[in-house]
Every structure is written in structure tokens, then in C-alpha cells.
Figure (tube, rainbow, N blue to C red):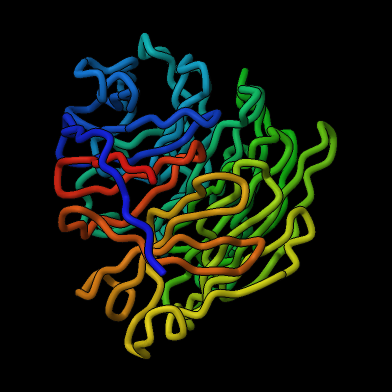
Length: 356
């Protein structure tokens, strides 16, 4: 059985690199360019207007640190850097800074500024953490490397033997740490998966060939707790109603799991080999998302790396059924569901908006 997609609009992205995010169920395109973070409203771009709805001066050059996050009201952006997390207002004013140990694996310094290590050979390829702003704009969630500024660094501290990584919740107003849990990881990178409720989030951490721990955290205003859902699963998406989390195996990318939230229990799985009929195909990583509370769009390809054989699928997480999606024109970009019955595919500098 197949379904044919209908093209609603084509939008050209105003920049070479971009990240599409849904903040408060509103799709925004974040473009780092020229030392700024430019925010575009997808709906405005579809209407033919190409001006950004917000521009934030970046605290360090493009490509340094992880992906920035923006508050739902676009009052401020949060930048996860190599040595600090910084919240920056549209005027460029620094709202607050949380300095932490350097993400360069061999460095135990707590730098004061990016200039302390900019251009140095030993800081050329650092790891990085990630950030997210809660839907009620009151907290910032961040994966950082400890110790933090002001804490003592043990004389015998060895970052290779005892990496001190933490998942923290901070006040969006002043950066004050409200809660912290150790992740006991050695990350190359990480990313957050937002939940519609402001008191909970998922954190997916990549450790290269060593694994990919997935966490589910909750902050009740007083206590921050986190459950480790697995050591070999990459988080992909949370349903718009917040009741389902999707993950794919790190070492076994042919298996996509459906988790019931908040417990994280696996209630079903989709096997790429059974879906495609080809044991050489895997689920793609990267963009993926729900069309509504139960249905999501996902992609498979040869080895799951986009090497060829691209196919898109409509997955029903309640019924555990699969339907192949057909397009009226060639599509190779990975699909990103927007939660309102539509989804996007990226084709070079263009985004194409689809629905059934």
C-alpha cells in the first residue's frame, strides 16, 4: 500500500547552513551566518517574505560549539560553546554566562573567553554539548562538561578516565543552576528532544563507537531527576501530545523503537529489513518527526547513511503499521514532520512542504 504526497510549497533557505526546529509547535529555521544567528518563520517564508523574524549576535564564530536554541518568544538565544553556555538577547546584550570545563578532551581548563584558545591546534576539533529552552521560557536545559566555574578541579583529575559531564537545568532569567545530574558519559556531541510540557525533556548523547545513551529528565521546580532509557539508542522525536518517544539503535540501526512516556517502556518496534524487504537498508538518522499524535514520517536508505535507495514511510506508532510514501517528483531529503499533518524535505538549499 502506498500514499501519494501533495506538494504545498517550495521555500529557498536564505543561507548555506540551517537547522529547522519546532519551538512551541511553531517551525522556525535557524541560520548561523556572518557571526549572527538568524531566525526565519517557515510560514512567512512560504508567503514569500525573506526577512528574518529575529537576529541574535553570536558570542563566537560560526561553527564553534553546538547548535543554538531560541526562546519561544524570541527574546533570547542560548549558545552552547566549547567553554561556556551563553544566553544572548537580540540587542547583543549578554543575559548570563555559565562557564564550564573545556569540551576539548585533553583540556582541564575553565577558560574565561573564546580568545583563550581560538585558533590553537589542540582545540581544533573539540567535542560539544547542547541546550534547549523550555516551552514556558523559564528554564534552560544544558549538557555541559564539569567542573563548572567556581568549583575546585582535583589535582589528579583525568578527563580521559573520569569525564565529569552533567545535565543541568538553569534559570532562564539569570543562569543560576537549579538542578544537576551526572550523565557518566564521554560525549562527542549531544542534542535535546523537546516535550510539549516545560518540565520534561529527552537528551541523546553520542559517544562515537562506544554507544549512545538516551536520558529522560524531569524538573518539578525543586528537584531534577533523569532516567537512563538505554545505552545504545539514539533519540529521534517526541510526539506532539508528549506520550511517545521514538529512538533507533546505535549499533543496530535497522530497529526503530516506540517508547511510552514518561516511563520509556518500549511498546513496539519497526524493522527496516521487514519494511523495505532489503537487509542492506537501515533507518536514516537526522530529521524525522510526527505528523500528529500517532503518525510519523521516516526514511530508509542503503546503510542508513543516505548512500542511495531513498524511501519514505508513514509509520503509525499505535497500530504499528507502515505505508510507503510516493512523491510526484524525485525526493532524497530526509523528512521532518511538523505535527500539523504536514512535513518537510530538504533538497539542497530548498525546503519542500508536503501533505496527503
